[in-house]
Length: 576
Image (cartoon, rainbow, N blue to C red):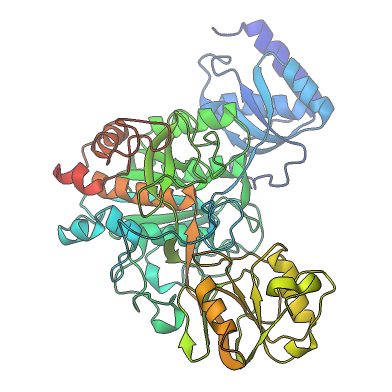
């Protein structure tokens, strides 16, 4: 249905009158609104302006927004939508405009992964690193690489490199382009958040470290790591390797310093990724858009944007979310591939969201990958002549090494009972200048560490009260190193007192992360490798191949926890 000339003329007259007869021009690349205050998305009726060109339609739509008292911050002519700043009165005026289909509040999405140790929104229910029974690391291959049979892919020359150029365009928090794993091979970078001083891939831009981690899973180059000084204990000195080392890598920074970003910034990022296609004027034959982000409410504008991107030939892949609940957006949209997370036993990660929109699964628990240089943390500890295994550093621990006497923090009675060292005013002068040995217990890690620090301790070891490694998250920053150790190590050390020990938290260039954010780049990179090997496939045909060859998990056939199962790029290419 199209509107009559008289209705259009009336709308234009009203618009021009309010604008003082000035002609508005589209604001296609204005900075995205990130604070959410007064930020709206406006969708116009896509058949309202008949045969007018996209630029003419955009002009009319921008004028309508201005007439209502709004400010255009981004405009997308091909989907008849715009991001705007509106007062309540302007919202009312726009909703009354017959050209307007809807006015909706702009959503905010966030990164869907975090450090494996101490992460609040992305960790297994146990809070500890799971036993890697089925898949483990070998050399530079992470357990996720081995689960996806990356060694076999690499041996057969399936890396994402091909005459037909295939790109993975990551939309995330940014990237440390200086990390040796990327070999300065990043093909493109752009900042869509509007935050200042974040537009250079080779300067500070990935404050949360999330994007660099995601990019490493896709693209980390074999033999390119930083050496022993920057690795985690037990890692290969050359670091890790990615799934699609031969593909072209792009990074769109759509999430800001806090790890969140607006719908408009993300849509602008998606459009930038799609613009890399040769069919859209770019240099890439195929583009996979990888989005380890989600949350927020459903948006008609976002659905329009993802449909348009898919129709232009891109394959869009997104994380389903870490709430253990319904699939979040954008993974829940039509035309977006939703990715769930599994652990190294190929069990569903406890945090992984579920629903009919889950299409595939990928490795998402204790995933090792790159982080900005020196911004990760590696931990070690020893005592009583033994070097401990499974030592984990606390969030916000100081990166310091301290050697000295090990002292039991609590006396076993009162508020410090059971060596738990609880009670906000609990102190022990014997800890001054020494290493505090504390048991996990009923009070928070924060309370224990604060008490030890206030008592003058120079380092803290907290031992678990159950089997398994101990990870912890601290809210405050401390000037002393804080680590978690196994229950058996702590109890053995307790029986050896008085003795000496060492606690160290040092800088690292790699970290273990959890989240559907970590599963997503595995699937995105796998898709790129398969697409490079089978370049005649459309995005729809590629997705059908990936789902039909996935390793079935859970209930036989597709289910709401795993989708069609663990993505298997080697089988998708070879049939085996």
